[in-house]
Amino acid sequence: MATKKKITRVEGGSTESVPETQKTFVPTAEAKGKATRLRLIAGILWFFAIAAQLGAIWFVLRGQSNPNFMLWTIALIVIDLILAIIGSVLWKKSNRFDPASKQNSFKFFMQSQLGMVTAVIAFLPLVIVILTNKDLSGKQKGILGGIAGVALLIAGITGADFNPPSVEEYTEQTARVEELTGTNLVYWTKSGTKYHLYDDCHAINKSVTDEIFSGTVPQARELKNITELCKFCEKRALDLKKEIPEKVEDKQEETIQIVN
Image 1 (cartoon, one colour):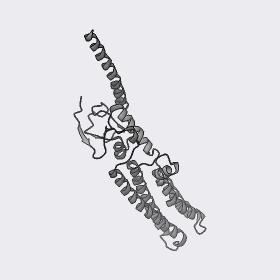
Image 2 (cartoon, helix red, strand yellow):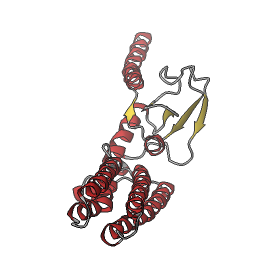
Image 3 (cartoon, rainbow, N blue to C red):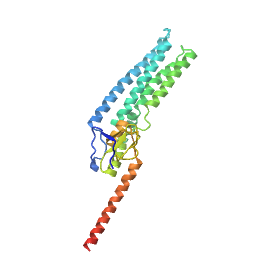
Image 4 (tube, rainbow, N blue to C red):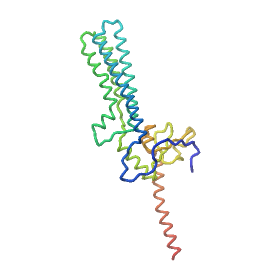
């Protein structure tokens, strides 16, 4: 029975099953364009984050004559952190549109974890300068070093991708959906954590659900970072696949009986 909820089809992406020779995931031109724009913005933000760090380093080394050098240094650290975090969020989002392949482990790591690497570049030199500066008092080192260290930790954790997407993952998940249903079409909700094979699945047809989105498996990951298939839908699809051969056998037996 079809759902009575509003279904919104996400634009772009082909839901048609592709031949085995073309199974490897390839991002659409639109997805690649979005990824490129996000990476460009992230790169600009990271550039200014590192510039803020250089400003903080200057105040630590040369700006101590300024009575407000501590405040200026702390302000620049905060600006550095904000820019680094926003850049990392955008970079990780770009990887959902255009993921790297695990075939090249170094490239995959660098593309997936560039936010974490940039966090180290944007804060570690400052931490070293603060802790090794002989002109700072112990109290100043404790305050500035502590703030910079915490900022490094926050930026590093935010920049790290603990479940990075990959070409292989997209390929495998898409192949599984096509194997079960014959098409690359799934459903999800705004606050959902799983994608579904059927729009009338009870897991998404709840009173709190106003709208159901439909699209391809990669689109579910691109837009909502959903990576898991609904177990209820998977079991339902497997049960349906089992029923088909049984029905065929029953029809064959009926035909034989009629002939006899």
